[in-house]
Length: 451
Image 1: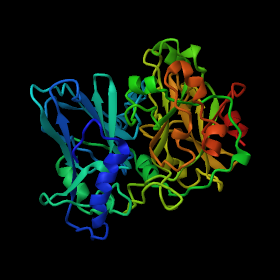
Image 2: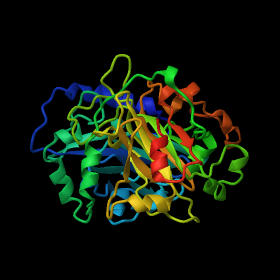
Image 3: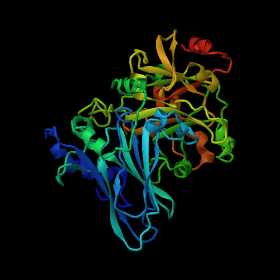
Image 4: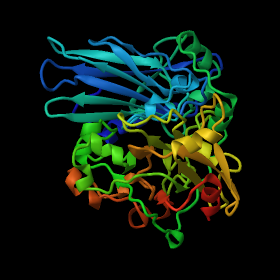
């Protein structure tokens, strides 16, 4: 794939769809592996990107490896964060401020300036993951171009012959290539992922169940959830087609966000989270561990598609406030696991003061502890109450899914963001409902309060 700054998200994808779909019916060679490749034009001057971020979300399990990609351009690729490996070592610093998903790996390259125009190529082994994207930053003016995985070139490991892109509907997924893990492992000898057995089980256990939203039973919580404004999208480098508010995130700010986002409390509600519950209607997501055919995005003509490729909620910590040092992310596959979801497709995430969560956390576990909710008959994960924000991630939401953050109004500036609220009006029953329960004093009362 050859990227130019003027390309839009949809046009880039369409070019690849027309080329790769011809290969859908080809059987997957058992001994083959696949690589991705994307070519970026570097121009001398302001029309050239000065940095990029490669994001990888929802690895099949904690033992999955993501070797550093190859880059033949200027600058150096750094691994910003491998939160799988960090969590396995008891380090949960990915939760700091805007944070990074606990089940994600990020790579970045900076200082891409060149003395004369040239092309450069990013390439590597396709990871067994739910979502991959490349975000290019153009400095003058500060804009971003997010290139989806469906627009990457895909090559067989044995040569330069092309292969079906694993993120195009109907094509074989990375999991269908039996030798892929071995190919990746040989290139990632320094990537010891580790992780506890409970993590391994829970990240693979979800189902692809999805339910139609029913606004009749929708009731907003007592806590507002916002879509990022355009200026906040740029400031935080959130995934977004250039010039738009990000449709990949919703967030509810805590008091610690005011320490770094000056005057944010003047424009949106800022909360002191302590005890409470988040009620979530769980979307259908891509389970990269077990699915061997990629189903594409849900639509009226593709009922078997995904509402969103990857969904999660994280409890983020303000930089200068105490760090709970606890597992901080729960994703959709964890919420869909046995005993976690009601017959109506609802799951619950509790939050409590960090010292309380520590009292029930298992030693060396990389997933949050759980409590049984007697009035609804399911288990719920328990996160430490955030001092920065609750961050909800929606990676590649379907354009036709009524739960997509794109259905929340996009405002230009932070000062207008009170008009960008995710609630029953904008998302129906798909809106996560955060309810603070300040009258609760212990975990048993918290569990008993959920109905």
